[in-house]
Image 1: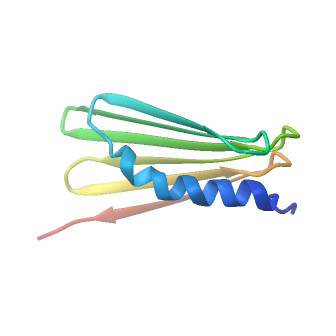
Image 2 (image 1 turned 90 degrees about the vertical axis):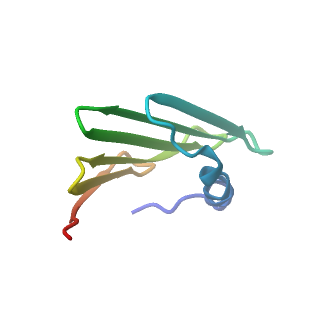
Length: 108
């Protein structure tokens, strides 16, 4: 497995500090693109839709270095009131994809 270039990892770290500022508003989409000093880019998209007692939020972060290598991470959260399902998909610079899913049931 290839490692992420240090400059790209640094940029993704910086974006993780900015991400909380992009809080989701149901029914809206938000996006942010950051260009690094070495020619790379980081793009973050966030959409959140609500309807029929279900809220679905999707968040995608893609980092690309100046040479064109990119990595991405997508998170989908589905909340139907009593439970939340989360699916996380990551794609490495070599194109390999890995997905993790988990669920949380809330009872009182």
